[in-house]
Amino acid sequence: MRPAATELLARKSVFRRRLLAWYRANARPLPWRAQPSLYKTVVSELMLQQTQIKTALPYFERWMRELPDFAALAAAPESRVLKLWEGLGYYTRARNLIKIARALVAMPGPPRTLEAWRELPGIGPYTAAAITSICFGEPAACVDGNVVRILARLAADATVHRDSAGAAKYFAPLAGALVHPRFPGDHNQAMMELGATLCTRAAPQCARCPVRAHCAAVAQTAKSAPVAKNASKPGSLRHVSAPENFPRFAPKKYEAQTHTRLWIVRADANPKSKTKTQSLLLHRAAPAARRLAGIYELPAPGHLALNAGDLAPQTAPLIATQKRSITRYRITEHVLAPGLAPAIARAIERAIGKSHGALEWIPLRCITRITLSGPHRRLIRKILSGQAAV
Image (cartoon, rainbow, N blue to C red; front, top):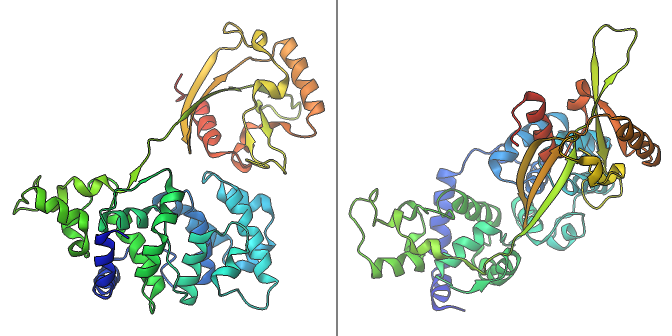
């Protein structure tokens, strides 16, 4: 263990006291903290996997109105749950919540131990520690990116980590030794709150940190450079660069991917109505698909057995381009509009017949009722509004 970490543990009682006092005076009024419950904690923790708090907030509040407890969630159709989740991505989390709810309502009482929660779908070490510490007082430490960042700075630990999972495993013993034995839930939430609000990745607000006296990175910087008296000016603890050097990660390798999607719209014949309506061709992933199971997206050329010759620029113009990132992938999607020339129309009808329901014409007026992937929901909205970038 690094000398700074050893010194931190020697003063852990003071560290805990300062951290908890700050948290209880400054914690943000998040909805899952108001009248806390096991259900709110479970839903919020799964929502916050891979999702920032500001993004999750409206989803959480709508979810609680629609599905207020485990019984309501267990009884809800998957399609309704996925629609509530639409736009958050990583839909396996929503399906895991359904499985967890159905498992819990079948039990005489909820599990209370770390090990028992790890047996439930989608519950890893971090989520199990969060649930059991907050709801049952289990002295288990949560170690996420916020906690890794805080501990690396407190210990001024320059170890280079391959990825966030490796860093979490590395710092788990130190986090476990620091967790408050009487108030583990508040301690874990305080650490996460500190990382989210003050000990941020860029421009950490060290001058306002309640545990800066325990931070080796701040002390190291103070020794190497003078600190300005005015904390709002460069050179102050608030603006020091040294804490920003921790934790350290090996350079990431990103993989570029380019995909083509198709925008195919047809006019719907409705002799009983004078209103002209249109439908958009969409593809829905199979229920057993590894990703996006049951979720709609714009079709790819392969879904229609089309080749490059069918999608020449003069017959299939580019109408939109969208760039996005998922984990280590940098994805560019080009949307082509091939129209409904006879050859394309025949290819579509053949593909629909062989798709077992995966390809569907969806009326544009019904687009808001189906569950689309978040990126394609945004893409379709931009195209329909004429705001798509090429």
